[in-house]
Amino acid sequence: MSSTDPFVKVTPEPGAPKPDPIVVAHGVKRQFGGLTAVDVAHFEVQRHAITALIGPNGAGKSTFFNLLTGFDSPQSGEWTFNGHSLAGVPSAKVARTGMVRTFQLTKALNRMTVIENMRLGATDQVGENFFAALVPGLWRQREADITAQAHELLERFKLYDKRNDFAGSLSGGQRKLLEMARALMSKPELIMLDEPMAGVNPVLTESLLDHIVELKAEGVTVLFVEHDMHMVRRISDWVVVMAQGKVIAEGPPTSVMANPAVQDAYLGAHHDTDLPEEL
Amino acid sequence: MDIFIDALGETFAPTTAAFALAAIGLNFHYGMTGLLNMGHAGFMLLGMYGFAISTQRGAPIWLALIVAMVVAVLFGLLLGWPTLKLRGDYLAIVTIAAAEMIRFLGRSQSLQGLTGASTGIRGNDYKYTFEALSPFPDERITVGWFTYHGTLSSSWWLRVVAWVMVLAFALLFWRLSKSPWGRVLKGIREDEDAVRSLGKNVYWYKMQALVLGGVIGALGGILWALGNAVQPDSMGRPTTFWIWTLLLLGGAATVFGPVLGSVLFWTSLVVVKRVAGVLVPDSWMTQSELEPFSLVLVGITLMCLVVFRPQGILGDRREQAINV
Image 1: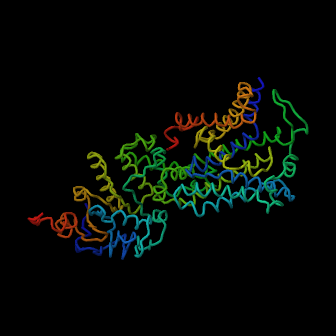
Image 2: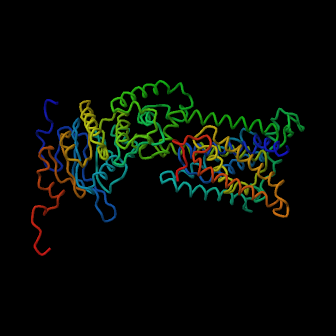
């Protein structure tokens, strides 16, 4: 698709610097009591690329997501988005700077309709101000624009026919799609998807993957957490592997799984040695 | 026939309007935003204190109203500041405690000169600014079956003003619930974190809802006080629970739910009381025992309602069923 691979000159090692990073995190550490959940020395996300964040359960991927997006705060560390520091910035403000996330456990707003869910994702609606809300003339036009944009996205995500249904009546997979579409309403520069394929049936997964690839073509940077290696291999340009809170490996999707550190993390360090006789 | 007329009179009594208005305030909290405010009576009591005390000290009616609303705003900010960042249950705990504190403070002897302690403030001490504005004659007027005073206390004048206010705030609720502002609040009701991830300042929106609903509650308190008297013990926990009851009865998150709920609640209370008064012989239950008995019956009816129609009478089951 792209003429030159931006990762050509990137060495496949943990914390490798990228030619044009959109997110740079350094020394981010989050402890829960005695447990160190996240301890990332250095981490960069390449702009206009699809980066996958993988790792065994409990590796700290979701916690790291929470830290980057302001839903949790680390004990120490620095991280920037487009060169602006985001340490200590509240989550809503992080989203407004153009870095929007979805959740592992889908957060569709169940007792609102699909189209209302979508409209809520939009930015720059003056009607969200209390006083402006009282004067419909001030926000009607913007509302119409938002609705048109929402219809377009819903069409793309095959949810258009459901637009007037309550989000709670959608299937699990459709809710995932809705959450992703809703996040796109704000036209983010970076979209962070926390396990977008979890619980989605194979047919829907295919179309979800296509959507993610399309996003990249539109110039959106994608960072996603996923367990299914098949998906990761199919769409990602770069894979970052976390285990026990640390980034243990990085590399292109074709070769990263061959890395012994990754195999150890997933399968245990002694997976290929025979068990001792006495057991 | 008497029972029928009494019940019909209750449908548009000032108390009914006052509770309807307070319930509209609570509807902003709970129906729209999902805030569990268990101290709504505190807002009402503060409203009536603000109005009555400033009137007693010579304030004109507009100033007294502003004082009442400002007090409610401050109370809302004070309650919201520590609790709105926490999970919903904390707001419930803090509001119920704060409302009780207002009541105990109001009835404490040390504030005798200000609040009249547990006796409260007599109606004649603060109703005159409102009654002076009455366009109705200063005598009893009969319209159809109903005879009330034109101007004094629980008058035609108060009825007209109270219901105009109820309609105005129902209209405000309708306008806001259909606006992008209301959409953000409904999103918060469903899932705060989702709304936060879409770039909205959740804390600030919750604060706006809390303060707005509280101010409406204070206005409801003033209406109530204009028909009765300022009495701290009439604004205890039962009042808050009644407002909750009638809101859920009518249907939370709906425009007319609070109004219908209030009308049904107060009317059925009168009907039950009067019917029981006729049917139940004195040897079973004295007149003074009938009041609590009718509340029990109303309570049972409401329990049935929650079981069989959890969204309330006007509510949309898909949008607002009581979630337990």
